[in-house]
Amino acid sequence: MVEIRCINNMAVKRVPEGTALVDVLREFPELTFPYPVVSAKVNNVSQGLKFRVYQSRDVEFVDISDPSGRRVYIRSLCFVLYKATQDVFPGSKLFIEHPISHGYYCNFRKADGLVPSADDVSAIKARMQEIIDADMPFKRVEAATDEAVRIFRERGFADKVKLLETSGQVYSDYYLLGDTIDYYYGCLVPSAGYVKLFGLEKYENGMLLVVPDANNPRRLSKPEPQKRTFEIYSENLSWNIIMRLSNAGDVNKAIQRGRASELIQVSEALQEKKIVGIAEKINRRYHSAKAPCRVVLITGPSSSGKTTFCKRLAIQLLACGLRPVSFSTDDYFVNRIDTPKLPSGEYDFDNIKAVDTTLLSDHLARLSAGETVEVPEYNFTTGQREFNGKKIRLDDNKILIIEGIHALNPVLTRQLPAAKVFKIFVSALTSVSLDSHNWIPTRDNRLLRRIIRDYNKGAFTARETIRQWKNVCRGEERWINPYQERADMMFNSALNIEFAVFRNHAEPILAGVPKNCPEYAEAHRLLKFIHYFLPISDKEIPPTSIMREFVGGSSFKY
Image (cartoon, rainbow, N blue to C red):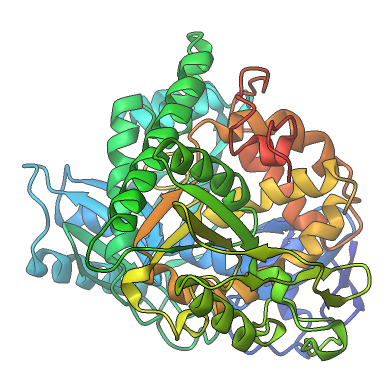
């Protein structure tokens, strides 16, 4: 017998060795959940409900409202989708590429190379429903990695072959759903009947997999058009083709062939080319006879690299003959005593009410009209807004650059004609896929950046950064993401080789998270996927790179 301490209610019970978690759950009938349980955390590590316990363990059961449970649900749903495509269209190719429109964009090609029609998508959706109604079980198989590689090579999965060959693992797991085989880097639900709620619809040249709403998992997310975001994804796909880096295996193989320097140089050159293009577009707008642009607004979520982007954009604007001046929306914070608070009692600095939008809007209008304005400077030590004689006037080819999380909120520019404002959204919008059915969420990209930066600055430990991340993401969903499609331009700050660069920095930092704390679950997950990338040194990363904002060594002053 082994002892199970259930973290959900701190009750302790004894069960036979080898009991699966799905059966352990039945030993706690008093537990109630708002949604069906889909997975568990065993000693703060995410496990599937088929996981068997052979030693005493702490177990926390989670439903789809928990981020780890949500990942398990979506991962399992992706396998159902893949099996359905193979059943309906044998020989077809499915690439689950990126989150968009509150769902996941799927690039699908039939065996003849044609894109799916609306009827094709309906047929695939119907087959998915049949698999779910049949409650088809998922089967996990553990095999020596060389054996798994042989199996996937025989079936033509070149992406999975490269991933496993470069993983450095002695043993690897793969999954079966009926006679369909696939690889997933995390656990799945026990059977297809667990993923009853889903949607599938025609989207651009592919399909959109619609998943339960993160805030209310009883209903599906409501898709919405994201044309500009989709254009960025299409552009990134073109970049990947140029660099021949479609997945983690491609990155690793390139590193093994000694191409690390080339990958760094090309990645940086592509980003610089994009920044040059944005600067030239702003310059044309500035010299427009009809309505000259005078204000550039830049926003993006945490750790998007927007500060370095602003610095590099300013240089390119100078090269165009413009003279950028700048300040941050943070300087317009209300005094600390007037700052709104979260339910926890902490200050909610992400709230738009934390900014004196009336004053900021007035200053923007006056500056755009050619007036001289004394702008404030916020003292973060005293929590007071101060006027220290900093004056700005937009003349002699000057253009104002404003960076902040609320920069695209229309309340800031309500007194300005739209033509006088150029809006830019910056974020790590894309990420290198592990293979055609496994991707690294872009939020994880930014979380890694933030963990490394916070640690290097001595601001927070990895455990503290992970603990804060949920509130950070909640603020982004409310105050930043709703306005990204209003941008005139989007800049993708992700670099295909950054996980390889970050590995050496992140490993020791994440390893310092204690195993006996809740934050270890995230640290363990981040370590797991970053280990898929072969590490490379940051020595050849340019001092102006966005990555330098996080690993240190930037030539910019922040």
